[in-house]
Structures are given as C-alpha cells and as structure tokens.
Image (cartoon, rainbow, N blue to C red):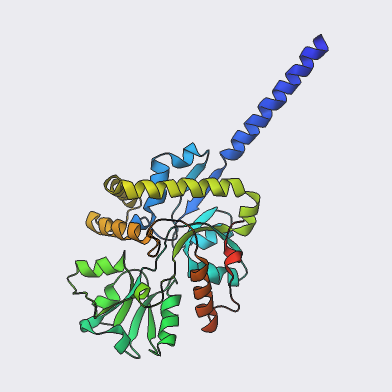
Length: 319
C-alpha cells in the first residue's frame, strides 16, 4: 500500500513537472521588432499587446524597436528578436544573401510607394532626374521601374525625412502613401495626379509589409509562430474596427519612444495603412502572400540584377 501511494506521488509529481515545463515553454520571451520606429504602420501589433491578445495566446511578447546600432534584421539574425516586419522585396534580398526566412503573416496587400516630383512635373517625363531613395532599402521596385521605363534616374539616398526634397536638392523623391506623402502635404506642397506617380496604378502593385522570422527558428517553434501570427491578425482586425482607440494606443507608443510626430499625421497614416490591408481585387483582408506578386517581384529583381537567382513563393511560406 505504501509502495502504491509512493508511486502515485511520483506520477503526480512528474505530471506537475511536465505541466510546469509546458507552461514555461509557452511563456518563453518572444521579442518582436518592427522594421522602423514607433508609428501607426505597426498599430495592429501594439493593439495585440495592449488588448492582451498575445497574453491570451500564452505568449510573453516584448516589442523592441530597432536602433541605430541594431537593425531589425540583425536582431533576428543574432536571435535577439524572434520576428520582424519586412517588405517582400527586402525579404527576397535577405534570402538571396543566404539567410532563409519564413513569412508567417502578410499585412500589406498593396504597394504604398509613390514618386513625388517638384514643380508639378510628371515623374515619367523627368529622364535622368535626381530622385530621393531611402538608404535603409526597400526602393527596389522603383529602381526596377526606372530601368524598365528607361528613365535613367539618379538615385540620391536620404535617411528618413523629406528635407532633401524640400530644400530643392533633388528633382523628385520616393515616398510612402502613409508616411512621407502626408509629411509633404503638411508642408503645403500641392500634390496631384500629374506630379504623383502611384506604383500600384501602373502595373507594380507588389505587396510590402509582412512578419518574418528565420526558417531555423520557425522549424523549431512552429506553434509559437502560428500563435503570434493569429494574435497579430486579431490585433489588426480590432484596429480596423476601432480606429479611434487604436490611434490612442499608437500615440502611447510614439510618446514612449520619443518620436517626433503629431496625432494628425498618425491618424492619416493609420487610415492609409488600414486601407492597404484590403486586397484591391477581392475587397477583403486575407493576411497572406500572393504567389503572383511574389513571382512578379522576383522576376523584376532578378532581371534587373538585384537578385542572383529568382526567389520562389515556396521559399517564403510557412509549411
């Protein structure tokens, strides 16, 4: 009888240890790093954290923005972060460089890039123009377009502001429809159909932001990855249904991270980002990569010397 009681205690203790181990595994720190500083571009992830969607999924998530010395991709490469947001073209270049990545959630269904020209000129008429491009990357489709359309643009790198354009040092600049475009509007510059070229209206509607992690991490943490993706999707859905409260959450993160911006700009950004979530063809949010857009991006970049080899859709998706 004593032996039986002892054995039961061992079994119960073992079960408790297993449960404790599983609980600790579920609560392992999951560090998520957006590819840029705090702003409405990442509203859905802030919502998922603040509304407890990550916690409800059994995840212990920490949101850490990149810094001057620690980029988002360097953080996941060094395992300091488990996931980051990247544009599709950036992810392709990283894979081409030998770092396999997996897309676990796609938020952007449309291309947000535009070219804005000075003096009301049509960007397609400015052959050889000096055009501003982000030095952090993700202007690859614009570079391909310049080659395809025989525009021979001279690309002038800038960090993050529109000051180079405003100073008159360049003829035109790349801008995001949810960011620099509205910064320019706030300065009083007139923007219209003549001097603004929208890529998604000219055959270059290639998806942008998605959530990526290294394939090595994904293969050993598939359940965790899917839980994070689903909770993030819930965050974006909630943001779409509750934009005003979402803006309050965004401003909280902006202030915590000491970002120089204003509520009006973040409101405009949030409105535009939420529009970009909706697939233009099927008119709803689907949160997945589109094979046709992956193929188009891969073909453009490979044919124009930005990839050493085509990157296939199958290399990007989570199995």
